Image 1: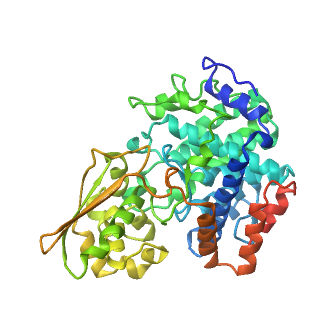
Image 2: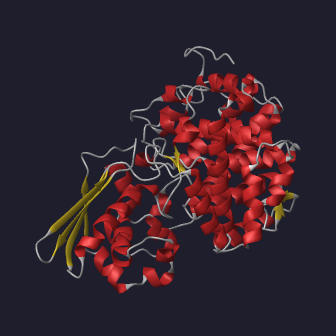
Image 3: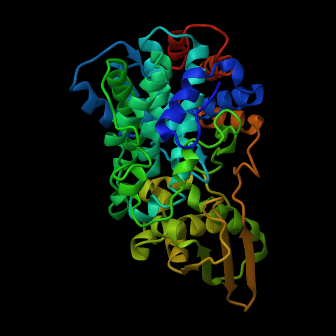
Length: 460
């Protein structure tokens, strides 16, 4: 396909690419990795059903009436847009889903629900679904990259912001939009792109809703574009476009939105999480576990953690609250708690987010000893670095640094490791037979079967 020069509006560049690309244009390795990212997402959707928040979301959405669209990991059915909302909640609700590291964006949580609802609505094939999902991930990642790590600094959740654009392109591909239609869909969804990080102040559930809302916004925008609705051409780079409104005064890279389309596949840079916590803390969990065996029975006098100030705002402030998380979701965004729990228990799993762990006196006492400083050597946003220094009562000082977090594209989890994670996450709520059925459906996605069959296979 031919893409216009950089002088063309960025949304149009994306539109020309999205309109012209076929699944055969996507390298086989990218398609295979995409299937495994989908597998991770579906497994997490199942696992989320063990918690209260999906039932609350379902009750809220059911007030708008039902529908015939399957919901991942559940028996319920909703309208296309409401199913997309709930699927986004299910995939992202545990904060265990994938992240495009330099974009600081959870890319599958909006792209997959939007592509799935669009594909089922239009009776598309699984191949159509897979391509739409891949395009959604590519656009979400690039929009996040354009923010150069700044969205969190000003209080926006890039998953909500960038995810809406990716969802619009994913839905638009299923709808058969041409280049102008794709440009219009992005222009329309730009007015729906928002998600505040204020949940960090009190542990509210709003972040769980962000990718589902982005997916619904993308479906809506694509439908309006298909009907002939227009959107601003310079939705990204214009005077009142995304980057000049959301990130005024910050360094931005709008050109990233159209850079390398069709040549560089950002999907393969997407990191699968080894821990069920905010990605900003993964390196600290690994660093703490790396030195734990050297501590022995000696008491810990002090723990010092060095982190870049932007992720530090998310996982270290306010420090008093981070040292004593109010609930499991609060704990996911607490560097002091995660480090203390890892040191105390020698692991960090879903069990360390249960009530007995949150009330564990030993963990909470150790969290009080965590101090935080700015990391001048951090690789953020290219990677999420973590440095831990532990001062022991006997005077010894143990240090460990993880410059590149595990799961990053330079240290990726293998496809086999993703399958193992899937079996672990889905295993808590589903039988082996169900897990096998879902695994087979996901890893054969794109074989020409109807997308509706895939969706049915991924129900409870």
